[in-house]
Length: 187
Image (cartoon, rainbow, N blue to C red):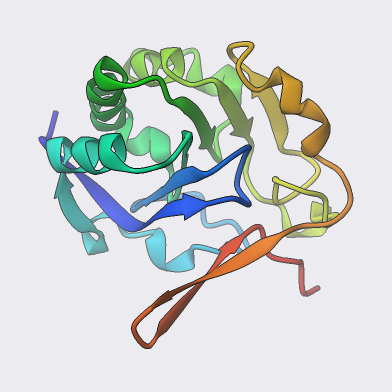
């Protein structure tokens, strides 16, 4: 296991990718090649910024976030590193975990290297993005993607997933603007 995570992007106070104020971490690296991917630049893992597990954990511990949402790229390509990071965070504070993955849950539970990350996940949104199935519903990219509650933590928020309409918010970093959320399909 590496002592760092390849990171595509991070934003500490997002409110449109899960309940409450969330620290959102987009990891680098994916080999799914989904047509219409919103994070196309996150495919090549080694193009990401290497951030130490300890530094990321510390930043999240100190954040005002009520939860963390991990997306990508593909989080489960760095499952061991992310599980280690979450373990460090959860030793210091209680934080909910939502993960978006292009893999289906049934694939993930068969892989020994994904077990520790799944065990720390409260809600998994699984399945690849399929452009033709993008129905514009909230908190998922396409209708084939499922919300799988691995704990009871976010079940109370179940009505927020898969309803009509998507929300986005802008974050400004100098001359750069990050538009965060699930974008509308531009078919």
